Image 1: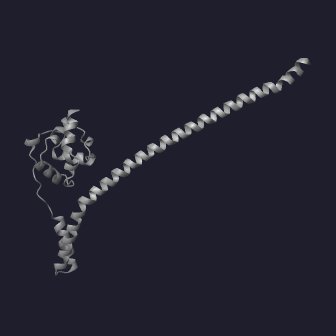
Image 2: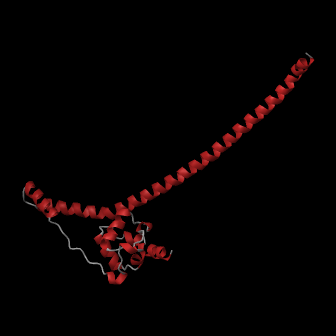
Image 3: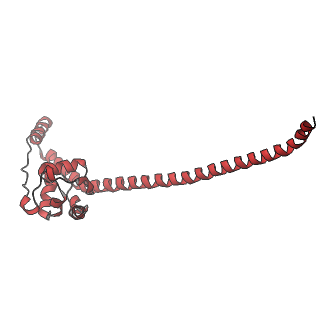
Length: 191
């Protein structure tokens, strides 16, 4: 019985030590959890902001570029269409028919590229042209269709070649020069 009374008498001390250890563990655990949460939260919010800024900046730049390049063409087409409508003395049905037939029968002779000036290539010595800024998968496909497959060819393009390529792939005039495809291709072929 003395052992039991001794145990009961020391129980508050052991219980006090246990409670102290438990409270220390809980405080430490939740403190670390809270600090990690803050750390990851700030890291995640910073990364989200960087991604959002890069996406928004790229979208805004592309939209602005496209709009500034297309706007003059749209205005010119609208003015020409208005002139034709105003000076046309025929009925609306004849105007619509004339427009349809001229649109369907429209064909433009395409200029020829001078491959002797910048080189020949085929799909067997093809580079990943999408690494050039401004060239996506669709433009790469269009370039391949006209015979341009690698950085070497692009790095040797002259101004006249660029104008012809722009016309052949129906690309925005001035965009190849602005994105500096020639310089980028030169840098990529060296790597």
